[in-house]
Image (tube, rainbow, N blue to C red):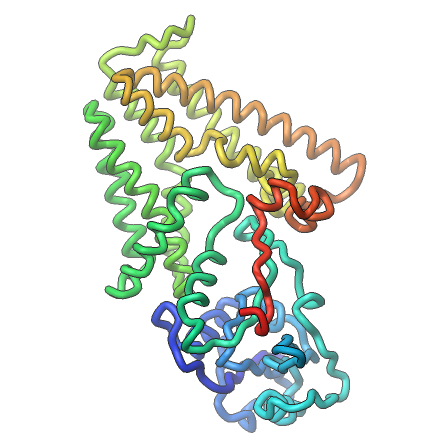
Length: 406
């Protein structure tokens, strides 16, 4: 049995230069629904139909969930009443469901079909973006175009990330993302620019031109934020782009540190027995071990990433020895004209971060054996921390989710 989609109506405005119909089509394609039908009578009897109102903006998670949920009518609150905005039904009920969505009237009962709302459809925890954010479905109107575009952008941002990405990049990244959309730049164009900047920064580091190298490196880290946001707000991604971005993120940081060491005229960090070779080896080993710990936790224990397990881990992700925090150390060291101290600081911080990650992994293994399956605090953050806790305010997004509050 195949799933087809039927999109009713069209929004009066585009969001990030995408019509609502095209946005729905792209999200549904990601959910595995590739057949979009205009005529419901063309649907095969054994197939099912996901009917969606195109004048509403759907959180991608909602459409993904509806694509997997047969015999469901989905409604959201509008003022004091409720509006049916989607339905996933067998082909023989498609015409009735379509009429229900078109009428804006009272929800009629369909045989064997249940009525669902956001609260019962899926949780607030978004594993892929490491954040707790209630799913949303809101009407698209001309007067809320800007607010909805900003909401799409904020929803594309990871909540648990490093301090630079979390607090420095969001506003300029939104400006540049708008510029990219306006001029027709695609995410892969931004990623390829990042590749060039990685090479430029690496070459400059190797030559000892640390100032210009850091300038190229920081621009690259900024564009590394932009390409992902551009991909999400325009629902544009390719396997090649995803693969290139992942490989680039994994490979370039330790290469930068190595070539930073190559460019040093001297290495006298004041730490007994710490030679340049030892520092570089320690960084490489620590970096690889850290990545292995993260992978082991995600694939064997949590399925959501070690930094989302407990609030402590989310706090630690802000400063752990990843590229951006390490670039801060290198930048500060250059300000004191001691780039060798920057590399030494990266060495020490990498060793400490990796050791702490190993301890956290061991703690997680013990908790899994003792208490059963692990659960991210972001999946039920209020229960763990209280609604007013700093962790909840920093790492969760509790924006209104329904049409009446948009």
